[in-house]
Length: 279
Ligand code: B12
Image (cartoon, rainbow, N blue to C red; front, top):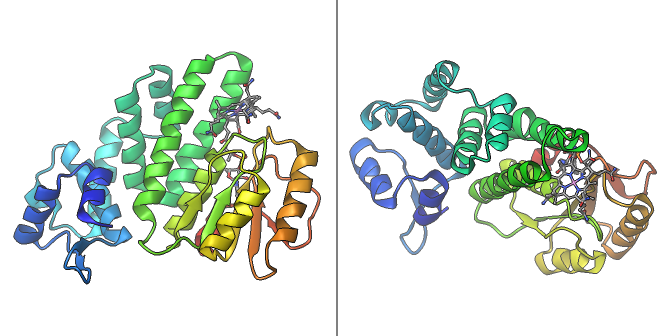
């Protein structure tokens, strides 16, 4: 990532990043051919933790010299004393419609847990709770929309931060009729955490567009996430069409609560997001 993107992702101004590099030797970028600074996903994750530690009141001169494991320990220690960022709190912040606080809590959780545990321990339980609490009338539709929009932004920011600056090699999409694209964003985070760049298509994408995107990028994998709301008959047909239109060399992975039970030859059905980090 370039210095501007790192500054946006971490909230640490570009000038500060340059000063720290001079003063503490961290964050250490590599130089592109054009002599621009470029930061690896590991450095960006490290900086996210630095940002959390600074917010908690630690001094840059103490925090910037720590090894990653020690920094994680410092942040975890602070979290256990300060406001926790587990799902219970995210729920409270969602109910309070407190955007900045919810954004901050999601960022802290990501920095503390790392991308995959952030998905599994915080985001997925929060989404499950939003669905059932909305259905039971415990929360209003505005709470559900508010919280899921913030989660979507956080996931979007996360995969963009983690994805290496290489051409996309994994296309992530829902199928026609399914506007629930959060599963696609969860998948994109896992793919990016595994070191590949996803191409994320918007919800309800026609099969022909998914195929065009795969051909245009020569992506080797297509990942589809189907929500509980997806029409199962249409999904089975959509997946057959998708499989038939793609070259045999392209792997197709499908998951989500609405993934059809029927096996479609040439498609891998799975629910464990961590598998996508190993593609
Ligand atoms: C957020 C949300 C919304 C948001 C969507 C925002 C967005 N951009 O995605 C908004 C507010 C827009 C919305 C709208 C609607 N929603 Co809605 N929504 C949800 C909610 C709360 C979360 C959905 C979600 O993202 N879940 C996370 C997904 C990814 O979890 P999952 O599918 O179980 O997948 C898991 C794994 O399989 C894995 N995974 C997922 N994909 C993949 C892929 C691979 C390859 C692998 C390996 C793993 C993997 O990751 C997940 C975690 O483990 C759910 C509740 C729920 N629990 O799902 C309701 C829910 C899906 N919605 C529902 C409904 C009814 C609707 C609406 C019809 C409401 C309305 N009356 O307008 C509309 C329909 C919109 C449309 N046309 O599609 C119902 C569907 C019920 C049904 N069976 O049909 C649900 C279940 C809520 C409920 N309890 O009633 N919704």
